[in-house]
Length: 633
Figure 1 (spheres, rainbow, N blue to C red):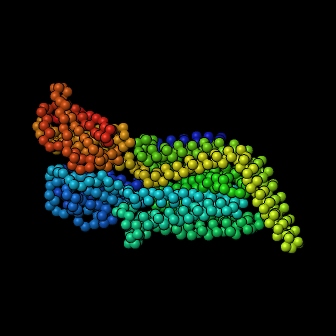
Figure 2 (tube, one colour; figure 1 turned 120 degrees about the horizontal axis):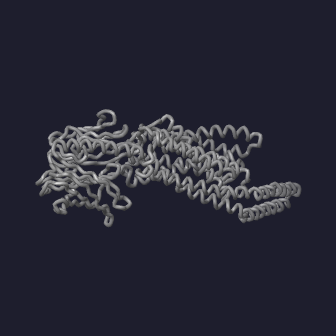
Figure 3 (cartoon, rainbow, N blue to C red; figure 1 turned 135 degrees about the vertical axis):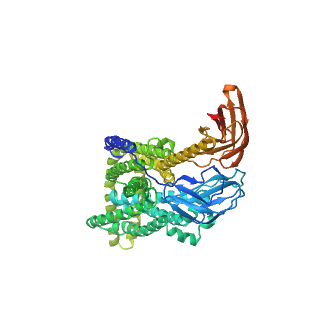
């Protein structure tokens, strides 16, 4: 919104793009937001003897509860015994009853990662031979349901409250000190405080259920709340509430004693409020940084202060923008052009800090250019970058109205002292004339009200002011959407972790397949597919055992790109030996569990290079066929 912003931003963008390229090409290992990278027994494997325990390996340390790891038999009965325990490093296990009968077993897990996010999932393995199972795990998603929705809403409102509270107070103190006496501005900042406080209390109550059972009835469980207070996320929320008490004192001084001080006294009080407000605002921002993505993984000691600066920059920019919008739409007092220009300068500095810290955070959470398009985190980040660019573009439009607003505001400001002198004169003359003065004072107040209304109509009719209001309103609209995307982004598994987990699982699967192939002649085929729907990407794996002429066991596994079982309605397989013009031989496997189909006694009539075609249907209308050749027999 400043007249000099365009060349500055061009230079800034070029420098940061170069820095972004350098960072992304020199990325090192990191972790955040735990992902399952291995298990024993492995997913889909058939073991001859029942294991004594089941263990799972994650990409980072996780927190366990009594029900974090469960093993269910084909009828859905729990067969684990005792509490989950740490095996070593990032591997955790649970004991199972001895002498488990043959069949397919389901392992479910619900843990909390070091960055405070719940992580859940499930997979199957079989003892002796696969069997049908009554266990359905398609709906097991961490942080889902009503409680998950409420928690997400609470996160959004907490960010919104923080932005309005910090940005609104900064706008009044640093750009428009006359705004301390403006009622709509007071209501805005106090509303931000109330929103952040209410949202923090809501998150504290929801936290136990959100990371555990997900039941609404558990929200007011005091024992669960006590457990939450002992966690890192609980401590961060309590710290935020304590800092909000200090913020309440800051607000009372800003909109109470500060507005009543003379100019000389205001200067000293402004300095004190600025120092105290910065400390409280930084503390509030740190309550997010200390418990979420920034607190774990690569360079956490650097990432946490960077995250604090990032949040303060967002609040100063978007919260100040909201305050400016209120000043333009709701305030009777005219806002000076100098105040708008000061905010333009503050906004530019905030954008510079926002972009610089955002580049570092992007490198830390993505690690490669491919993660921008191949992970959900990267895709959301691209949307966020686009919204920020749009917001800056609208700000370019606003700077023209800012420049033209100057003369109008100056003329309006000059009328105010004259109006005050007339009112004071009427009041003074009223004192000398006794009872008749009350009527004169009343007329003077009425005249002042009429002058104010006329001034407001004139101000609102000013095309420059109207243009500025319209462009600032557009900026605020984009900011609301930007905040929603940011909220979702903070709850999404970072792209770097997702890619590392996929690589680890692929390596484990390859090692397992090679071992199985060497020992028994089994063949495993992995094929990526995309049905074209909104949720149509995944990987299908086909196993033939012993991959020879005659009867074979065939297993089909369908997984999402992140390695989780994919619950789809139908899978079909067709075998074709093109060299001998045999086939296609259609096979319709039976559904065993989520993402797992099986067919027994699949007859291979002749050895050769068989084409294995798999048709995957992810919805009523979305399906595709992928194929790969395999030497069988």
